[in-house]
Length: 342
Image (cartoon, rainbow, N blue to C red; front, side):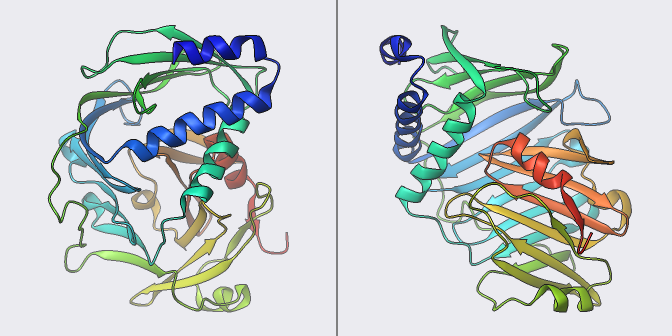
């Protein structure tokens, strides 16, 4: 990797070439990973005590199969983010509440490569990236990428990523705010890339009686007008979407007499969805997550294996935005959400 970066230094002004090389490297590393079983620690996401580490077990299998489960602190043990290749499930056992999206499809490699290219281009157009030697992380050789924003911008924070020299995934990440104070950190405490995972490693079922809002991408969908008629809250829409993204599908869910709506706005392998359900208060604003300002509203943000999950509420509507775009872009999308017709 050092040789590659040394070759790129004379071409520092040629951002296009650096984007192509960097994206190819990241995509090749991703597809080289067959599986892993890891324990990671995060700091900054327990809102009541940001200094407390939140420990998770993360299991992964190619491609995109992932199970991230909170191990500690005890009051959050069992919180899950699971994708088995077709179904995405998010579970908060403390509130006996979950979200599920069924009949997802894993995009082909060329679309994944295009998404990585787009995100790499976004990064290199806004950050200076330097590489430095670093001590091993979880027993593995890493190189530290120091990423400094070209200019101050909302949520565009400086960070340092210790990248695995074989797979080019971050094994340690430290993010500071614009005042230089710690904002978020993640560290792999242990990782086994040769782990044997059981056949049911990504199987997950919600407990009987759980409150679950369920959306099926294979369903025909409804119009926005019908969604407005059937929900107990106003359906909100983002005014601004990244290039290529548009509203593709409107889906309804129900749990008893309570309805929910999901807006699907993906562009090939660049996932973007917004789910909306009635605002039931603190239950729907997760206690684990980085505090973020969403326009005039307080929200929380979580990073989960390449995806960002943002949760917040606007009056009687509770919202969850999920995407694999750069998180500052997703915060911009969230801040643009408005009632229809405004």
